[in-house]
Length: 200
Image 1 (cartoon, rainbow, N blue to C red):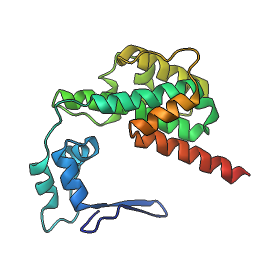
Image 2: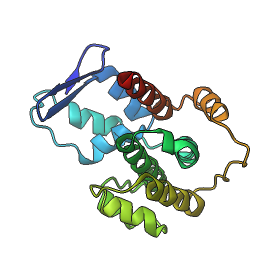
Image 3: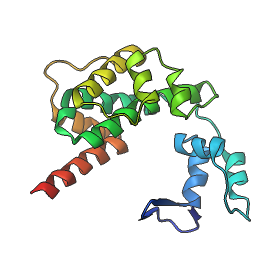
Image 4: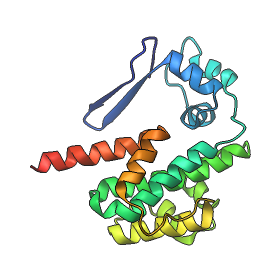
């Protein structure tokens, strides 16, 4: 849903999950080529839209010249998961592994001006067989080691980032996440901290 206030909200009732986004933010994100807004522009369907906000959003959208920032942020979080993902709960790990793979592939397709979002279609875009299997069978349960190994193969095959040195530690990644404003990585750390606090 779109609202005219400045607040982003999430409401969950039973099986219904509803996100409410400020129109002003969506306008800015469309003009800056944001990938989430690109997804809305390319695939959203309006249920009720008497003021034609979706059409306005489509007119405003401009691709970025490069989506390297998104690729770098997904790669950074990916290597963190490869090295330290055994410390995350399995559901969060699985979700973030898929996010890393999808973000790299979506960003690359957006750079080519033919954005792809559906997991089955993204699976056709990767040279990494383990990543392809994860995308196609994303609802199948996998153990943490196989998830992290599949992500490692994907990162080595598909991204220009180099594997971290053997001595890399968590604090190096946490500092980098903060310096690069890597929201998903920071949110992942926060969710894991909250999850651990719930066990105490």
